[in-house]
Amino acid sequence: MSGDALHELLAALPEDAVVVDPATVENHRRDRAELCPAGSPLALVRPRTTEQVQTVMRWATRHRVSVVPQGARTGLSGGANAVDGCLLLSLARMDAIIEVDPLDQVAVVQPGVVNADLSRAALESGLFYPPDPSSWEESTIGGNIATNAGGLCCVKYGVTGDFVRGLEVVLADGEVIRTGRRTVKGVAGYELTKLLVGSEGTLGVITQATLSLRPAPEEALTMVALFDAVPPALEASVQIMSSGVRPSLLEFLDGPSIAAIQAYRDMGLSESAQAMLLMQSDRGPLAVDDVAAMGELCERLGAVEVAVASDREESELLLAARRMINPAVEKVGASFVDDVAVPRARLIDLLDGIARIAADHDVQIMCPGHIGDVNMHPHVVFDRGDDAAAARAADAFGAIMQLALELGGTITGEHGVGTLKRPWLEQELGTVGLRLQQRVKATFDPLGILNPGKVV
Image (cartoon, rainbow, N blue to C red; front, side):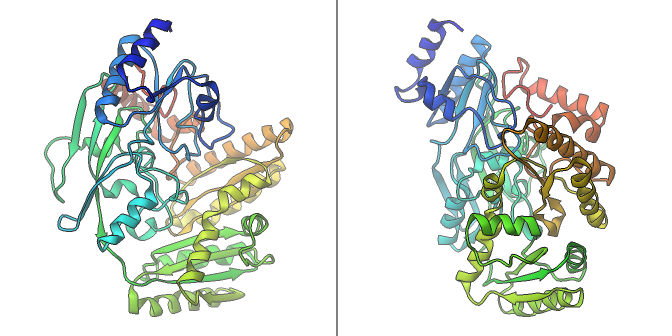
C-alpha cells in the first residue's frame, strides 16, 4: 500500500476519523478470542456517518484493501480480528438511538449503540428489548446482529435476529441497501435482512437497524437451585422445559464455573455445589406459581437447596454472577470457548461426552450455559505459556465440536464462526451448502475484501 493511497483516505475523511498511531491500532487488533490469530492492520477508521462508511468502502474497493468491521470487540470467535494490511472499521462512534416509537413498538439505532443502553431507553417508554448477551453492558447492537447473539432471556423471547425488522447496510463497493421494513409483516422479495443477520461483517457493513420491541414485562421472580451432582440438574432443566412452565431465564453453572466466579468476586455462591440452575419467571402475579412449580420439580429431582431471591437487588446479584463467567475464567487461565447447541434429548449425552473429553485430553473444562435452549459454553482452560497444555486444549475443543455434530447439534449457537470454528463449518453445512454460501459471499463482495478469512 502506497503512502499516496493512505493520504487519499486521510484527506477524504474528518481529521480524527483515521488513526495510524501504532498503540491505538494495536489495541483494536483483536476481539476476546485470545487464541485466534490476528494480523497487522494498516490503520483504524472510526466513522460517524453512513456517508463516511461509504467513503471508506469506495476507497477500499479502488485500492483492493481488506476491511474488518468491528463493534466493541467482545466476540469470542475471532470474527473482529485483523488480517494483514487491512483497515479496521470501528462502528463504535455511530452510537445514536435515533428513535424509540411506542406506537409501532420499534427502535431505530446506529450499530455502535450498547445493548444495555438500548434496553434502558426502551424501558423509559414502557417497552422491552429482550436480547441480552452476557456482555450486554459492553457489546453493541451492530456486533449482536453480526453474530445473531442470544443471551439469558432468549429461552423465552428469542435471539437478536428475531427482533431485526430492517437494516441499512453499506456494501463492499460503497453502495447502500435498505432491507426489510418497519411493519410487522412483509414478504416482498427474498429476505435479505435474515441473510445479513449473523453474517459477521462478510456481506456488508451495518450502519442502521430497525428493531422490534415488546411491552415491558411484568415483575419477575428469580430462583436458584443447587445440586450436589450434575445429572439431576440437567434432568431438572429438561423437565422444566417440557412441563408447560415458560421460564424467562434458565441458566446452568457447573461446580468449576461456580468456583471460578466465587474466586473472581465474592458473590455468596455455594463452594460445595456441583451444579446450579438459575431460573426466572416474569409473569407478574403468576410468577409465584411458576417459581413454585420449578422449585418443586428441582427438589423432587434431588436439589439440596432451592431459594427464591428476596428482592430485585438479590435477583440482580444472581444474574450478575452468571454474567461474570467469562472474566472469571480469564483469571483462571487461557481458554478455548465453545458455544455448541444440541437437541434437548441429547443434553445429558453432551455433558457426559464433555466429561470424557476432559479426562481423555487431561484438561479442565468448565461448562456454563443457556441450558433452557441447550446452548452450552464449554470453556477448555489451560495455563498460559504451557504449549503442551495448549495443544491438548485445542484437541479437546475440536473433540467437543465433533461431539456436538454427532449429537445432531451445531458448532455455534450464538458466538459465530469467525476464524475459530471455520474448520468444522463444512461438516455442519455439507459440501453443497458451503459452496452455495460461498456464492452468496461472492455476490455481495466479489473482490473478497469484507472481513476475509471469516465464516466461509
